[in-house]
Length: 116
Image (cartoon, rainbow, N blue to C red; front, side):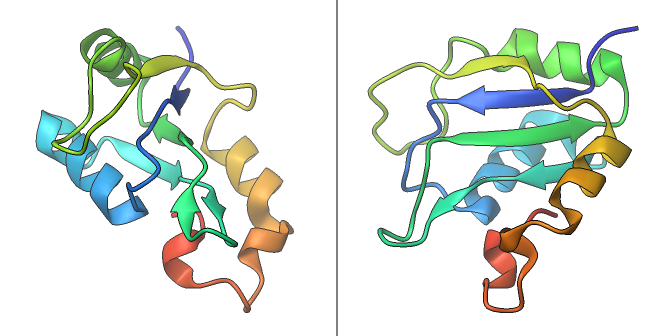
């Protein structure tokens, strides 16, 4: 097998969760992602430039990595190409457990800034 959870680096800071999910789904991966998190810098209300995505199969994760690594996302101006690599935590269960008690799951955090 292989990894199912990928880290996407150099995501444009203007991207929101909805923007990045739309980009992923628009590339043909709708229904192939079961965990997604784009951390936000709450002081600036911008993404921090990376995201975690868990795909339902290692094959889908590898296909996404091969297609996206080295490319640019969307039409927003980006200064660096996207880097895609295996994440430290692997799988839906590990990611859910990790973020379950995280501060980002607090009622004070807007739902659009929480893992989905």
